[in-house]
Image (tube, rainbow, N blue to C red; front, side, top):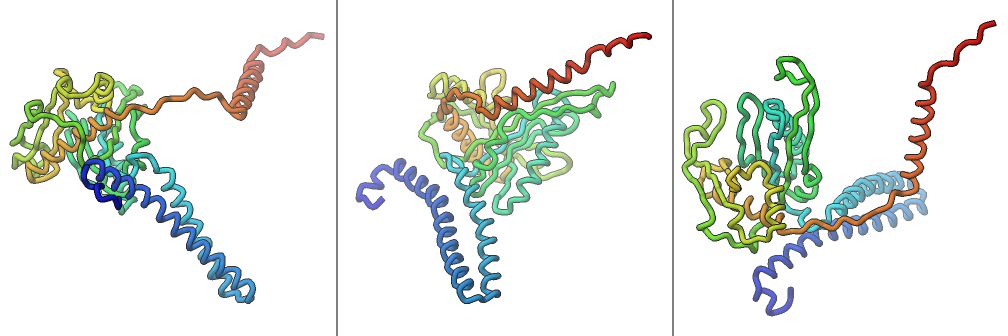
Length: 326
């Protein structure tokens, strides 16, 4: 970064600065813990040599507090992948199951809201919400801003299943419903340029919400449509983009994104474009190759023990021996 030509390529320079900030966020806490540990060790040895019980108790408290901080540093070391430090978008979409799936999507939203509220260092914004036909939600998108938001939440991606006796089933039958959760990192900008002619942005769309809310009275919602086949990306990346977008791709092959979080149409437009960039960058990132692995000795042992237990159980299910008469 001290080179005179460092900023000649702004794109590469910003990438280097972002990488440096990510590494610094991991190294600085570890260096602080090491310094505090050395200070606590010296204080403990001095208190032991002096035989001062008060100083020994104080040193013990410092070491216990340091242990908790070391655990936090160890957790941060696990969040060391490329985009773990970024903000993220969390999208919940109802899947198969009809009204039950809409209710399940709203239950998932409440669960995540409780979890996010337990992290005061994160800022939460609701970007877009569409309601179900009767109850619940069809889809909702949240923006989570804060340190390592994507690293914490990326493991939630996938299909979530609920099996219960549905209160919406007139016959009281057990029903299985599904909802998908997608988490994408937030990017400042993307190297992929999309011509304006390939984008269809519909302003002045009346937002939706229950009751007489302000979103029902003003036209600030923005809908962005882009035909996936027009994007300048490879077929493999296009397939990954379809999978990541899920139900936001309609029958015409258009990716439809909407935002009504802000009172300004301009900010809602920027929000839609930002989410489009994130989906494209994610699609352009090829998945990590899966390496074939062999089962461990412990897993083979547990499997053999389980088979032995099942065998003994089946033997006990046989017909009881006939009693011999005298």
